[in-house]
Image 1 (spheres, rainbow over the protein chains, first blue to last red):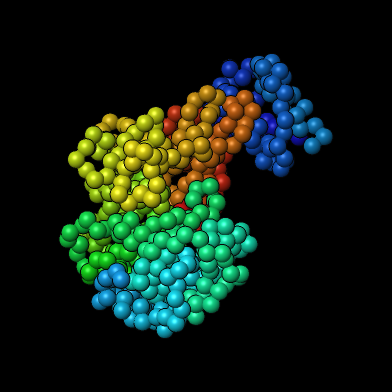
Image 2 (cartoon, helix red, strand yellow):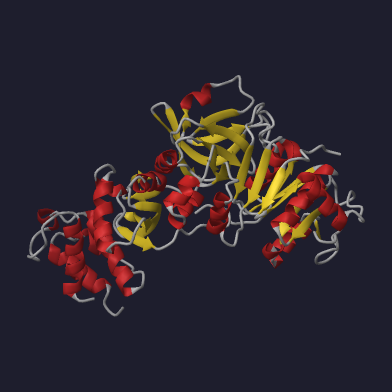
Length: 81
Length: 418
């Protein structure tokens, strides 16, 4: 899945929760208030969009700190799907 | 020979037949055969035929039951055969399928069919005494009950037993092919004064029948059961029918009728757990509800039935949380009960029906996902924002559904549950 599509999903969740949209990939998820529940919701929405259940690597998830990490993570997870 | 209320009426559209008439009709079809030496289930093609068989079977203390022909499948036929139940056509008593080897016959046993929450077809043994749950009610005002239940189910038999054993209680069987139209027809004929149903049936009726028609029903008594009864539906019905006595009844095909609540509130009073003077006992152990009832068809040595329903005390009331094994959602270690979320969603004025389930999700383990039927169509994103805000105002963040599925109709099952 394209990075911009993933970012759109993240921003849809941010807007729904009444938070500002993410514009800077280098910001930490904590700074922009993108929480674990939002991460899980993003995963579900991506799965719904591509119509298949993804398998996620726990070790990669633990390393996530920035918005860029989130985008990299989902980009990698959806590669070849 | 069991005595029945021969003068009570059953109304089939514009035709009314009394109990004696139903017995005579079944006697013409079945009277030539001696059915006293077998356990049989009559295969019926109409509700009138089914009621005739029940009147006939109960009058003659047969070991019997009824099943709709449309429900017969290889699995169902196999279940009857392994229980030594002979299937017979209701219209002439001839054998359906193969002849089954006879086993122990119990005069007066009534075979009740249930698909249970597991979906497995089960045969539950009852008698007129365990089905007649109104037996201890001395004074029952005369009523004509709309009966929307599936033929042969426990709830159906309870309503039939009411008509057979309590004077002044008439029935209007609903047409299962179009329950809303048959309810509307019963209202238009001005006959219906009472109804026993499920919360899902009412949500379906509220969506399918216009409010003025519903309001025109002169309902004096409304009973609900079979599912968790939430505050939103109780309030909605109280507003529509201020003159009616609204009760919710906790009953199951195995525990029998046990708890009747008529104070207009969801759940039941915790003081019921303390009562020792009652015929029916209620206790809570490790969050599970146990019932001791003379209407139960099975129990442990102390007479208690494990209902497998989860309950919780909040203040001075006990609330139902759902069934053991398929209820709790674990969101990152936080426990959420879907029924709590559903009840909150259904309290929103734009929501007619809600169902919340768990969906596997990375990091949190699971997230609550909601299916919703809205009162009127609206933009889905706007509806999602509206309901998310509604949940976040009261529920914990982890209990707020994250995915929303908007349906056009309530997915009501044959059991009138959803």
